[in-house]
Length: 237
Image (cartoon, rainbow, N blue to C red; front, top):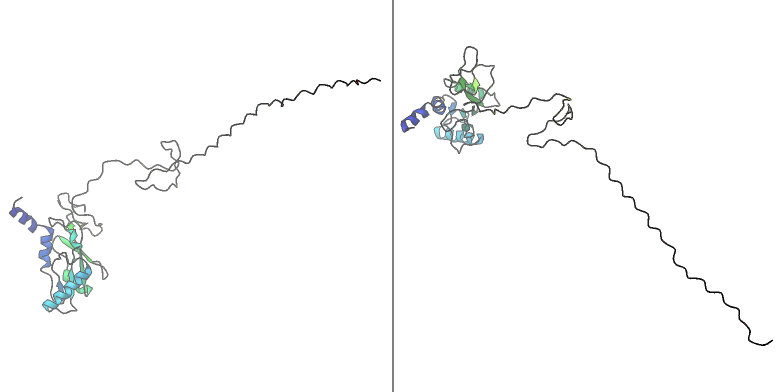
């Protein structure tokens, strides 16, 4: 892509259109801060930038203002296309900011978040006669132009997995293992192993019987001493 082609694409991007509209805003008691850089990262940074701009330009400190910070700027991709709602923050009087922002640039709309919220800038999706998004719209917006529609992501649709999920089992259905799944079983989180089926503990094996000791023979006894022979007197009677 040549340099002229890139420049023409940037001029047609959402960021270039929003910047062109943003430069037309401002007036009596209402001002807008320039588009942000990395130094304006939070709402506190935005209010500090507003105070500095008021001091440099001599704007009254009680004037209302609007801006977006660097975190909101993430709604744009590298080509400047709007991939999500752009949050516009503000300070001062809510009614003054509402009137100062108006309805937004052509092809976009602003959703008012109320006195305690931010304004949201969004593209408007072209719809057909049935109120459905126009298939010829190359870049659908974050929300449809129908007020009853719900916001959805900008950009091309995300590729969905073609893997089919198994149908949910009814209460008491038979699983592959032949066991009945309870109806009140809690859902299992992804990545966790399936619960194990409780098993009945086996009884401990019986102790082996001890064989009786072999019979012991009585201890040998010594033979009785022989009977003593009578003593004969050798004397004469």
